[in-house]
Amino acid sequence: MHATAGQLQAATTSAASTTTSFPNTHEQIKDVINTHNFIDNKFVESQASQWIDLHDPATNNLVTRVPQSTDEELKAAVASANKAFPAWRATSLLSRQQIMFKYTALIREHWDRLAASITLEQGKTFADAKGDVLRGLQVAETACGITTQLTGEVLEVSKDMETRVYKEPLGVVAAICPFSEYQYTVFRDFS
Image (cartoon, rainbow, N blue to C red; front, side, top):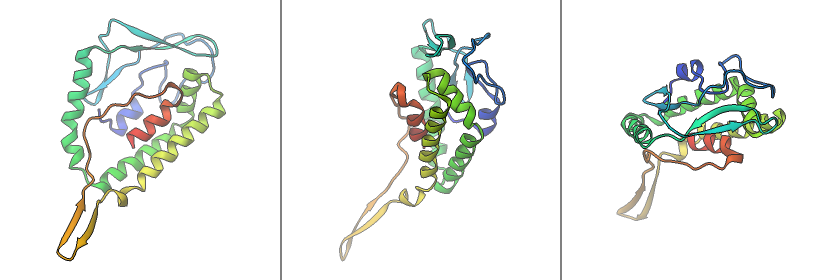
């Protein structure tokens, strides 16, 4: 579950889009693409038997279909994240910070595409959706500056005794995101 910048730029998984061409009106999408799962560093078509149709609230046009992923797909995603975790845990704070810098650069580079996606999926105006992307960007930028807070603490509790606080990555986590603020939650939780 760990994407490289190349994969983020080259791949697309929904709404018949590419990194440079994406729906930015409420016109009907001619070739609706199913949303894919992201497992083992690649996008994978789901084998789900049930799908959730995602409609543009402004027109009720179909935007994409989201899989109700199978138990096997969920287990594969968790196993993939668990497999990637030791390398992530061993990554220095400064290296993680560089990844977050790249993440914020990608948000800025694809600002309009992200806002267009929010507009299609939630029916917000484009200006309001751009504001949502801005709030997410601010969260990601804050994460870039948090490295000094992640080093832990040493408290001297007496002359010959100290207490140490270590801050370490936890591993695989899950989030249930509210539909109205999912983009903010994703930015915050990724950070």
